[in-house]
Image (cartoon, rainbow, N blue to C red; front, side):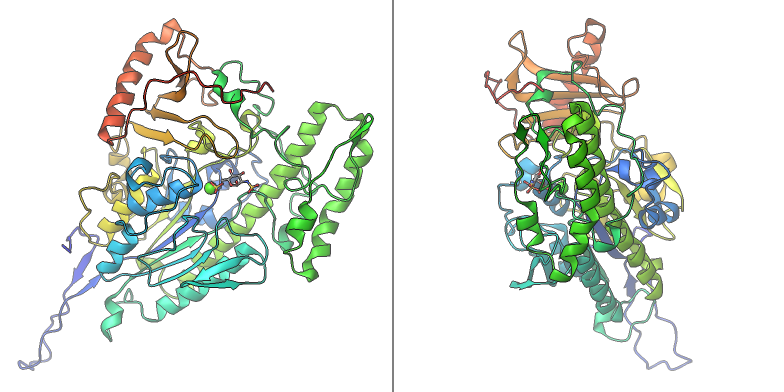
Length: 559
Ligand code: SGN
Ligand code: CA
């Protein structure tokens, strides 16, 4: 493993003379390499993070933990994923390779854990590597000295973990459990940390990489007990596109099943239980959230949860016969958004406490701290929840990085970085040569000089979503985005003229992506150049071109 002298990896020669004792052996040089604390949540959109403006509820939602990373480090405003879905995004991060290269393109797959990953490369270079929290890659983690991960998606309450291969059920709320485990591991790792310059045994020259993967705020948004009352009396202003009918877009939008008004379930998602919702002669059937999810909740907590929703549920039942569909959607949005934000607040508490712990342990100065999410999220925009699309809300991920003495505090960058870039960044920071088959690009230079390096970091990004048969029925698509334009091609769908179904957006003029210009003659030149870009972006990452689409009916549904 070649150790790069990048200036970040400071070679501290301790070969000072020993008071004239010429016979004393010189100590070998100690290398101070940074620790890495990588905190990732599941489905946390920038709209719900206050350093990004928390557009869902400005002034109401505050995320002081995450904001602290931005304040003391850098905030990326145009970070994106290559594939907005959980397992695939994680596989991209671990390998620095697109889904078609690492083999994990949909959640249904199992990650080939024999392949090269950044934890394995760091481990081989002497890092101590650990992961705590959601994994969701099918196969068990490899390349870690210690792993403590949720089984599958993981449960909110009393979740089952696999700890170094052994299954164990832990009592409590998943966010707090993951947090407590992370703190415990941090303390254990700190005991033998070298960043203070102390080198008293062989282990102290080993920095660590600790990956902390929260499950929250993933569906079905079950907050901790202490967050159940948060936002209770507030009204969250819905996004302006909550009642979008997608008239300005292609028919692909109508094919999904992720509508706040139709696809959130009353009971499992919205926690409406124990009341009858009667509309005319019909009673809305409810499934069994209480039975299935509350069954996992410790008895001591169950009644608190029921009670937190009871009064609002009863008020809803009383109003329900008089409510218009519009009002029902607004009610659903409030309940959904509040539970999402409450659940996300638990993650922010954890981030704040992890930062405080790094201070206490004296590790802050030589530790890179990252906060991100496996992709973004729709908080009612276009009428939706969930992710998957290349549209801004799910395509963009939050990304904040703190690295004292390297990143100037309060930096902001518009660079088109992607989750693909984590692996090479961590490797370069650790002084490990980035293997040539890694497709991402190291952000280290960019982190040092964001002002001069952001614009040139990348001029276009390639995206590819493959899971059309999964939940929410979003059709397969690929696309390319530049600073200004985005072109999406739905690979299984044909447009009116028999050509591939395309969408083209002008992100400067239309940041909400309401108007598809792919058939607008005024945009024919833009379209032509974006089609060329799509081809070159696809070629650059050696992605396959799918056969020209044949008409398939993927259960189109009108709203
Ligand atoms: C589950 C969720 C979906 C979600 C997928 C993928 N349904 O199927 O809403 O899109 O996971 O999520 S649920 O009823 O089980 O909550 S991902 O984070 O793993 O990609
Ligand atoms: Ca996710």
